[in-house]
Amino acid sequence: MTQPPRLEVTHLAKSFDRRRVVDDVSLSVMPGQVTCLLGPSGCGKSTTLRIIAGVDRPDAGRIAVDGALICDSTTSVPPEDRSIGLMFQDFALFPHLSVAQNVAFGLGRGRDVAPRVAEMLARVDLPDYGNRYPHELSGGEQQRVALARAIAPRPRIMLMDEPFSGLDDRLRDEIRDQTLDVLKAEGTAVLLVTHEPGEAMRMADEIALMRDGRIVQRGAPYNIYNTPVDLAAAAFFSDINVIQGKVRGALTDTPFGQFLTPGLPDGTLVDICIRPQHLKIDFDRAGRGPSPTPMEGSPARGIVQRARFMGSESLVEFRMDHDGTILTAKVPSVFLPKPGTPLWLMLRRDRCFVFPRA
Ligand SMILES: Nc1ncnc2c1ncn2[C@@H]1O[C@H](COP(=O)(O)OP(=O)(O)OP(=O)(O)O)[C@@H](O)[C@H]1O
Ligand SMILES: [Mg+2]
Picture 1 (tube, rainbow, N blue to C red):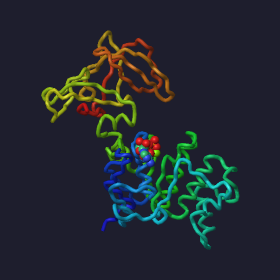
Picture 2: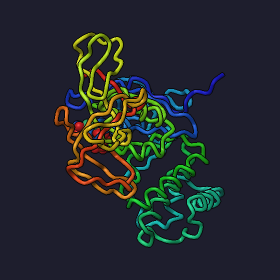
Picture 3: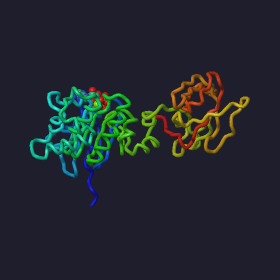
């Protein structure tokens, strides 16, 4: 028999003032796995999390933990009985309790409390901090205590809502990785909410991309990044260049050569999308570019408008000769062309996404 998901959410819906904020959301998380609910501000991420936690009731849908129903239209297990841990952005520690007392908070009383607290503090690399108080800790140390407190009762599921957003950049990466190690070691299933694609790609086994209350795409970070379902999904992860065209005879002509657009009727407008790092640049040879290759198609010429040095790379903006549109290329930073320089651009065709215009 295959194992049921640790957390399984099906067809969840919730409206506020007749507005659908969560619309037919389904997702699942296996033990020891991290699913990221990723989407722009206001798309319904926190509302979804609150329903799973049991703080809000859904209008429709069901939630199961290890195959057992905890919530549907007639049943609702109270939050404290769901074996769900919570960690939110404003993870306040109790200021009047010591670190050890904070971590012990959800553990009740008993002989095994002290060893579990010690184990948790060791796990977050704060073994000697038990007698300190929250105001004696740095932000990152407080975050680690909050993590220890949240997982001490061995929740089967951990819901995390932007838990790292209060930390500065350097610290954030370190704490993210450490948090992930701890949660994996405990075998907890994690549903992490974030609006940052970078955070989702760093943390997630699976990303559920959310927009206007709906999950528009689910998959491993690699797949979501490399096979986005639409232009908005592609553009959520990075800047994106769009080259417009119109279908004729299953092909779309562009200044960069023809693209196959099978199955689309003549006259359909299409967006050919490519990330800035997948444009290739070549020199101008007295008004001519490099010869077309099968992989890269035809080159098209543009004039450098702006080139910005970004450290490991440069961002170069081109105004294209053929229609005056602006395309952006990301190139190694050894290359920083002057504005006004004519250069030729090619598209890595295997990296182009072709979408009919919405
Ligand atoms: N209790 C409520 N009453 C009315 N509207 C609400 C309530 N809670 C949330 N909303 C609305 O539902 C929508 C989704 O809110 P939610 O907090 O789930 O978004 P989010 O994806 O978490 O956004 P963010 O990334 O900014 O935290 C928003 O438009 C919000 O104003
Ligand atoms: Mg939110």
